[in-house]
Amino acid sequence: MNRQGPGKIEWTDWSWSIVTGCSKLCPYCYAAAMARRFRRSFEPTCHPERLGEPGKLRQPSKIFVASAGDLFDPAIPFDFVAQVWQAMWQAPQHTYQILTKQPARMREFVTKWYSETSGMATRQQDFYSHVWLGTTITCQADADARIGELLQTPAAVRFVSVEPMLGAVDLSCHLRCMDCDGSGSVDSGGSYPWGEWIMLPCEDHNPGLDWVICGAMSGPGAIPPQRDWVESLREQCQRAGVPYFEKGSLSNVVDRPLVQQWPEAGER
Image (cartoon, rainbow, N blue to C red; front, side):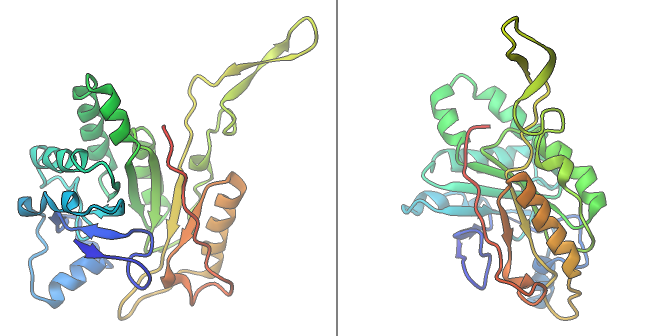
């Protein structure tokens, strides 16, 4: 595993390259650029020899899983993903942060895994509280295609990384439940005889995103996002009360101190 922090991946403590490579081959991908630089393959690859690494780290830490790849790439078999999940299960002192561009596949696996382990309720709940699941987006089209799948996937924290930000993004409909505005209750349209208004539980309540990360393209020839795109996203999160984290790559984009907020992990 590799130590992270300021100047690296600021929102995690360690990166765990249990899977490297990705089928999407995005032209702005920093991991693909590094692979080309060192003449390494970027084909999706499993690294079973690294499964025991989290267990060797005693200090409770945030671990970014597959930072240089996609654990839920179609080329990665679910049998191996299950081995990764088991390795995380066996080292529950850590918080595991997983980002994918394949949230539908992540939802399929996670829903199945929790269903199959439902008999181990106490231990499952403890593990469940340490898993943060997210999806990467770069523009509105990505947000529209991916966030819905993420929000239907069980996790302690569900988050989005807008990186690199390639256009304006409106996440307002994903930051809180549109039916009850995040309160969990809806107006019944009537009142009790003594005048108190009747509120009912929101049957289709969707708590929305718990965390939003924003970052710019990096490396030679990087094109920075427009300042108003970044400020709009920050304001959306602020209005909805959703923690918002700006990466250091935005330091030359905004003319103020970076906002770096963290989510409170909770049962979802």
